[in-house]
Image 1 (cartoon, rainbow, N blue to C red):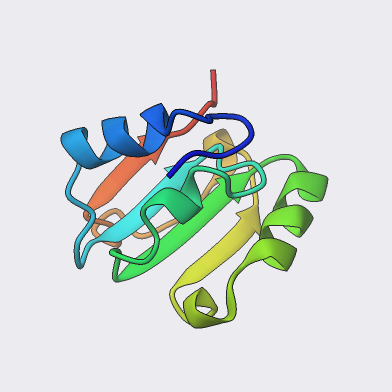
Image 2 (tube, rainbow, N blue to C red):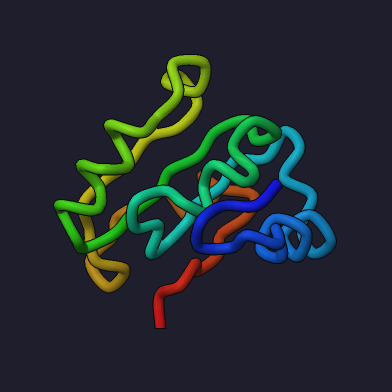
Length: 98
């Protein structure tokens, strides 16, 4: 499925080919408005998306589908100052963070 920013669905296809999110606890650094988050969140056990842009996080929270409200959380934080338990996630990745 494509989006306005990725009409061919290349991002979703690449994520699916590289990472199996099924049942995993995921840390997504640089999640922005959640555009990438929604490509895998239904398969994940738990998702924490972080970004230093508070407006983008507010957009992501507003866009959270009701069925994912208990699975997906968003937090305003910089990667350098993020405090999480080291064993708290199965997968950690950077999405559009460079």
